[in-house]
Length: 231
Image (cartoon, rainbow, N blue to C red; front, side, top):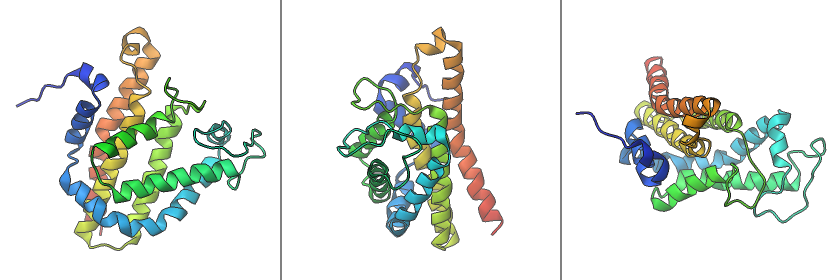
């Protein structure tokens, strides 16, 4: 029997949207259990993951420039020249600490209402919303690429644990779904439903973002299946 989804509620009711996305991806208690089981074993890898992410961001001026504005909560000295800003600058160390705490939160849980608000907050602070105090506004193309890189790095971390094949496959699938759920929180701040009628270019962006998120579970599941079939 086909389930009815209220399109308007997807953009006005956060809990309703989360339920739709997680149900579509088949993300449930078993996924949360494996994340909370494997997560603590990944925590020692966090410093290396954080450094790898920021080395990647440093490699492109279009991504690195987003670290010039003062970040919300940062009280130290700001380097406002792109050529002088490097991975060891104080404002970058502050951002690295945020990513470290973010990964710890993902690994530790608990996956409750507070976690949903946290995932939403992480997305919101990177976009241009009225509630923000900072001037940081990162285009979706960069956030999407970053999430893909984080996932690839995380996959490498899971594989390095040499878990039993079944547990490894479950962990890869669970983390894949989790990061795509986070990606949808980013996506919702780039898609205003009113624009899908008024602006063709914005409509194309929103449609592609929604289809990318919906297809992610299928792609991630296929990747896990291929990996298992070859080992």
